[in-house]
Length: 103
Image 1 (cartoon, rainbow, N blue to C red):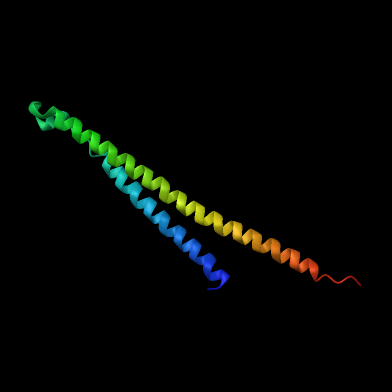
Image 2 (cartoon, rainbow, N blue to C red; image 1 turned 30 degrees about the vertical axis):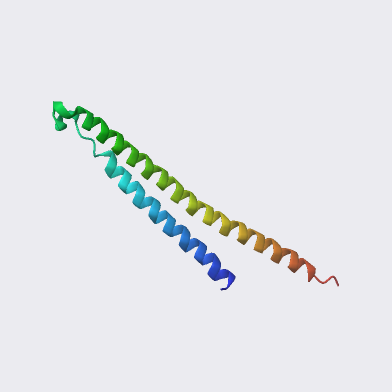
């Protein structure tokens, strides 16, 4: 695999992680809207309403954490590419300086 192909693969992988983060964000947004009024469970089942809300909030939190982790993975991959490109350019500059001819 060439260096260019490896760098392009980092960018493509970062885009996949961004897509995952976007999907998790969309799911979390939908979960936020899934509130149910306690009286929908009837007065005899108020503890069910509490349990439902607890589980809904937990799913929301997990989706948010997944979104953050996926976005962080994308950012890290882009940072790796930028670091490698910077180091590669520094090496080229140093090598080019070796071939400077003084007349």
